[in-house]
Length: 196
Ligand SMILES: C[S@@+](CC[C@H](N)C(=O)[O-])C[C@H]1O[C@@H](n2cnc3c(N)ncnc32)[C@H](O)[C@@H]1O
Figure (cartoon, protein in one colour):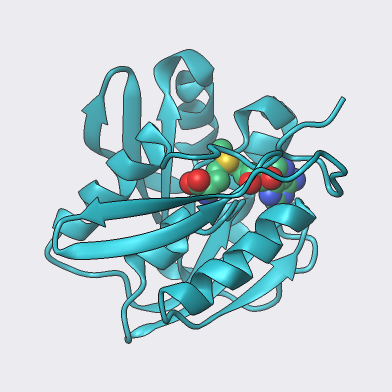
């Protein structure tokens, strides 16, 4: 069975462009079958992008988008003071990200990597809407693993539904991060974790 987190996909294409308006930005995203949230921006990703853009301090420095899909988080949060890296395991999603970077005039390095396997260096921010369907092991690898790829006082932002293991993720993160819920809606929490 083909999942949105499969590496390769042979599912027939059905490309659809989405226009995403968020605060003063208008962005275009090409989407397709066999990638996460085809044909519309995911509710939780939108909640997180909006919450971060509303904060006074824009993301800056080295930023890593883990599980970038077709690029929603990194591209929407991009600004000129950011050095962006985007990773995923799904080839079709990464191709769409490359296309969407060009369409939105955003520069980033796109890398195939299972969690942090191929990631080098340390980041000021790690942003993720983690792949719940890939299972708790992968989700925790991404969330807790962030501590080893953040600079001192670096920040992990993630979004998760309370039904999708939020409490157990929070418990595991508590040891390494100062945790703050910056927005919540319909069971989803946008969480800001500062590395201790
Ligand atoms: C919930 S989707 C979020 C996609 C995108 N960030 C967004 O907001 O629309 C999670 C993404 O994680 C990717 N993914 C799944 N397993 C992964 C892994 N082990 N390492 C990195 N990315 C993974 C999936 O392919 C998918 O694109």
